Image (tube, rainbow, N blue to C red; front, side, top):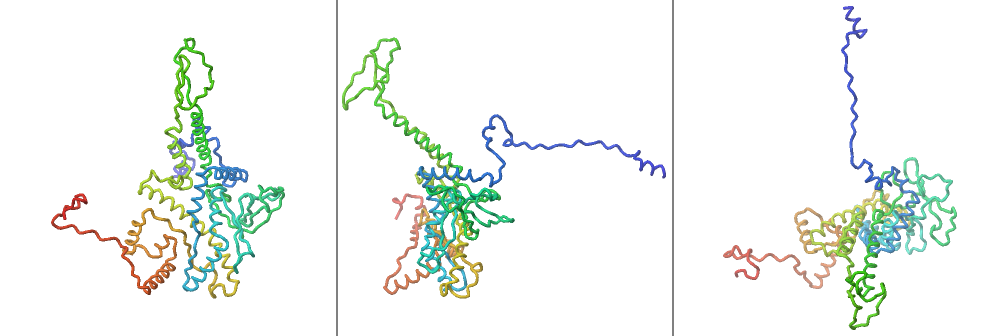
Length: 487
């Protein structure tokens, strides 16, 4: 017993354990391999943070180039305008959802008067266009004593160039924005003058505006990103290629058109042929016969521009450009000649979904804050709003936008009637598709029906005509041509 304990303590009776070498697993990705073929392609790849990659100088260069393309390229201008018109349209409309219908109508009416007075729809369209070309748009909540309303709240747009920190003594991690310890913006630095203005003196004069008064709209592509870059950034080189190719084709066509013909000879260099000076122009008269020098013949220069691939190249480039905006080709090009009904509907589904996402983002970021600011000022004016409404944050509301027109209104009307008959939709949802308030629409319709009844007018039947019955004696009549069916 003692010997066994001794062996156990000294380890003389231990089993030899064979050491197992560690295996290092190496995962192989072709995209992570750098070789002579892809070295130059990935040379610009970096590991910068979102804010370092979108530095002030980088954003300035991208803004200037995007503005240049939008100013000089009709396709770029059309895409930006179409995007602004489809996202904002004629402007958002407020619908209050409190338990008091009278209070709802009163608030909606006063808010609509204010949005019309400050031209909110126009400013929102400008902000959407600025986001596409500048990457971001800013608006300042301010007071405008010139407004012809009791509520003098106004929205003043600020260009992205002015939101910057010109004083290098201020250690600001993100140019133009000061954040607190939890990542919330505290204040914005706005230059008193635009740096591109003729009166700009490059002084350090700027305003420190609290974040509660600034509306900042941009798309967040990376975590921690605080400033935006133009939406058309990936397409800027493609716009340049499209313009260069178009100009090259035009120059080639003009060069070919400048020559009426070229003299050719089949004689060898030392052969017998009359002397002719190279590159010597020959004046030709209209409707005249001309004789060529001996051994020479004239051929008209064949115009080979534009080439057969010109239209296809432009189509592919425009299709790639529009992809970064979630826009289908026919919307970007303004041309649906190559589309059928099904492909047009399918392409528009992705586009309209992107539009709805942007409208929702606009509601949360801009419109709800605007409504809260308007409500705070309107509540201070006696008699403007109903009493005992409570804080605006507790008041339910929604926003209506312009509806998207259907390609085939008859098919959409039949589908709408089917959905309502099957109780798979509501009047509120169907009117919302058209950007209308269902309560206002029904009240208006009731007024129209009452007036029609008073005037003795009747409604004409607008439903689809029932199908004609097929005679029983010829059950196969559906398979015959319409003009040859048996009576």
